[in-house]
Image 1 (cartoon, one colour):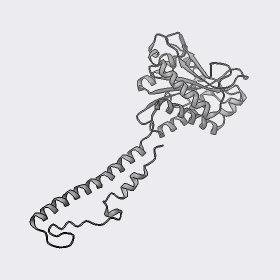
Image 2 (cartoon, helix red, strand yellow):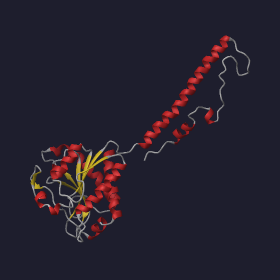
Image 3 (tube, one colour):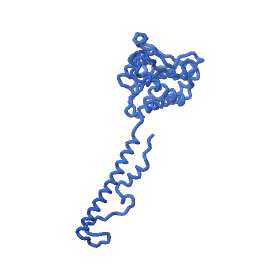
Image 4 (cartoon, helix red, strand yellow):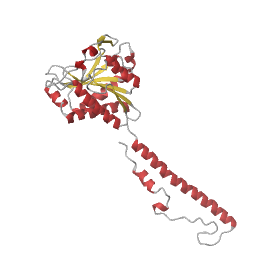
Length: 298
């Protein structure tokens, strides 16, 4: 990050004037010269003016290091995401399967009506998508907050139901988020593998004005995720891991730049092994954070 300038530190040590840095003290006797011989009245007045100017110069020199020190400290303490609002949507919810009456309710996403939410998928041995997205989302939230961002999650736990896809979009809209990301993992055929990023299309709706920004966000996250995790581009959907859709309520209803990421295929043995590894989930969170930071810094 920003390093504290060495020059400012040195100036800070010299902030008490030339004497503090090994210089010679200056005599300010009003009626004697350097030789100790008494000065005339006019000479004393001139010497006084000279000494006053010298004092003012020294005072300015004293003040400057302090100002530089404060500016350096402020720059060093500045965080790259300070002032930014980021919404993270952990896909699905761990309790969805217990509440079909909630998640099966139909909601309007402008291009069609869809279920309020779904249960999501899982690995073949039962590690659920909801648990995976909850874990990665919280890891990502901690990283972003450490960089100064205000982070809002669309759900508070992994034991409830919902919220509906309409509410997940509304959370980002109300927060006026600078960026929003919905984290998922796919449930494709076992032979398919790799990740892809989903971005909105224009639908003559509220999302239209952020389609361009959402694409820039998607590309930034795609690049950082691929570099940071080594997970391959999807072998079964999208072009170079980019996919555009108009059937997702979380995108259609968004008025802020937003993307979905399918981090890989939970039904594929290789992708699933990565998702179940705690250290690799942290690596995923770091990569997602880098992508968001790259987008917000552009």
